[in-house]
Each structure stands twice: as C-alpha cells, then as structure tokens.
Length: 329
Image (tube, rainbow, N blue to C red; front, top):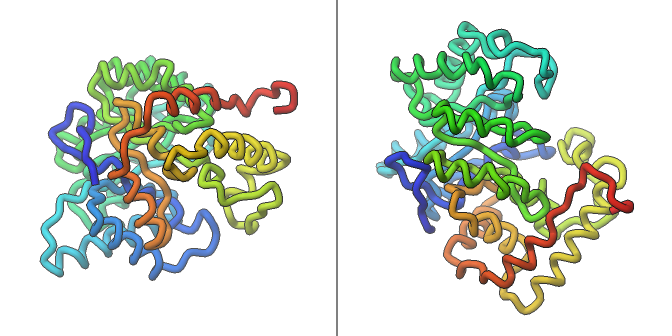
C-alpha cells in the first residue's frame, strides 16, 4: 500500500481507502459478517482511512467500523486508523434548496446532538474528521456551520473539518477552501466525471486541502461488471441511479473505455482507480468494499505501476456530461 499526504495535515493516508456506504445496506442485502471480514482484510492490507456517514444504514456502517476497531485493539494491534464520518443537514429538502438557511439546516443544537450520536455509535471520544454531508452555494456568504464546528474542534470533540460536495455543483465548495473553512473536501471524480480537474482539485492543492474521491467506479459501472440488462433490487440505491436508459448508455461508454485499455496491462477497475490517483491533489480514493475479495482487488491497485501519460490522455477524452443530452449520447 502506498501513502499520501492528507492536504497540509501531519498525516499520511492510504491512497486506497475503505468506502463504507455499501456495508450500511444501501446497495441491497449485506451480511454483517461479510462487512466485518472486509474491514479486517482491508486494514490488514494497509488501509488506514475509512469513510462512513450517519446515513449509511442509520448508523449501521459506523457501528460495524467501531466494532472492528475495538476487536483489533483487543487483539493488540497498534494501528493509526483514521475514520471520517458525516453529519447530514437537519430533515428537509435534499439536496438543500438555495432558499434553505444554513443556520436552520445545520443549527448548533442539531450539530451538537448529531455529533454526540456519531461519537457514541463509533464508540470513540473524538471524531478524526467530521464532514458536512452536503452544501449549497447559497450558504457561502454566511458559513455559520463551520464556525460551530471550529468551536467543537476547540472543545476536542472533532479533529479535522470537511465537506462533501453536492453532486450537481461541486465547485460550490471552492470558496470554503479559499476561506480556510475546511481541511478536506470529498468529491465525485472519475473517468466519466472529470470536471473537478478544471478548478476544484487545483484550488485544493493551493490551499493544502485534503481530497477524498468518491464514486470512482461511477456506482459500479466502471468495474465492467454490468450489462445493458443489469437490474437491481428495489432497495438498492442503484435502481434509481441507473433509471431509464442510463445503464444502457453507461455500459456503452464503458465498453469504449475497455477498448482503450487493450494491451495496457490494466483491467477496467484498476484503470478507474489509477486514473483518479494520477491527479496529485488526490489524497485517497474510497471505493465501496463489501467483501474480502473486493478488499484484495482494490488494495492491490495501489502497488501497480503509475498510469502512463499517453493512456491518461486517452482516458481524458472519455469525460461524459451525462446530464446534458448530446445527440442521444
């Protein structure tokens, strides 16, 4: 496993982290025994960064992570595992409307109560990184929630402070980085969605902000496992993500990428992760890991050779603005 600086912090994180959304059950049925085994295996392979959230199974993901950390401590394993979690805005429109007020959706009483729950669920006295689970550009002029988080930081309840970008306006957090409000930003970045490379990632480097990349496999399609006919269970998030003809179009784009990889030595999922890691602003990428086999496969990518510049350039051409209909593609 290779390690990278986490922004300007005195911490080096595994460049492959553990994305713990799926173990909360959002991707259909998931046995806790499989989740625990996957977590243990990833940590054995050198992973030292885990990302979770309050909403991942209503605390289920956090409880499993806390259990694994306690089991390893009881076994005498001395590890410095960094756990990042997230607090959602108070109930209301998701994503937040421009007319929502930050001081209402992230009120101090609400933040304190939610963070107390995060501490209890993980079984820790201090959160390594607390991220606001979403944001809206309308709140940039009055980033009151971050003032509250700084106070909680001074009280010793949280270590670092971060934010997770809203899917359709990721650049809304650039002002937060430049204003010094956040230590990290969690961003969607993959072969299809390359927009962060235009500005956001460069600003993160300038400001010393750690970058956590989510959705590196575009919810699984960039692993190459899906076909145009792939369907998911009703309780699986991907049923909605790939609604309509989105799966058919995504698979067609994926197959075009697979052709680019012929004779490259990379499988499609390996290339998807190496593409993300090729940007120097990236601190860690957090693919969802549900099984021991996935832990082995994802962690193994770290020690593969860096992606050649010529192949990287070919993959740049696969940026896909799927939200805009260009000739039906």
